[in-house]
Length: 89
Image 1: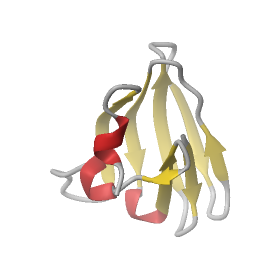
Image 2: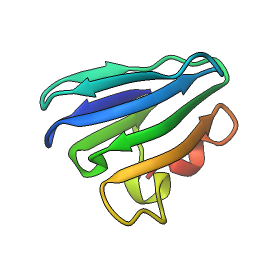
Image 3: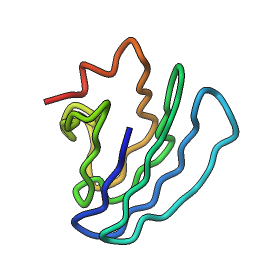
Image 4: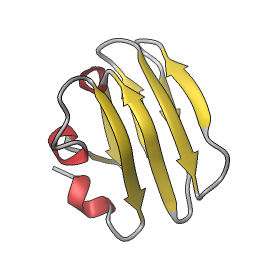
């Protein structure tokens, strides 16, 4: 999975394969690759509208990632090897 901050800065609190939660901030123009064998969980992703998310090279649909969001912050999105296709365009 890849997160590309092409529309502004974003902050991400994430966990891969049940490991320790990590925090990062992506500045506009930066990107980050995430590797997971079983699952990736975005505990919190801020400024969703400023990023493009690619899953296995295909663009994720932000409305499918967070259908009930009320702003630019997304909480608790779990992406697994079994469900990732439901988030794609």
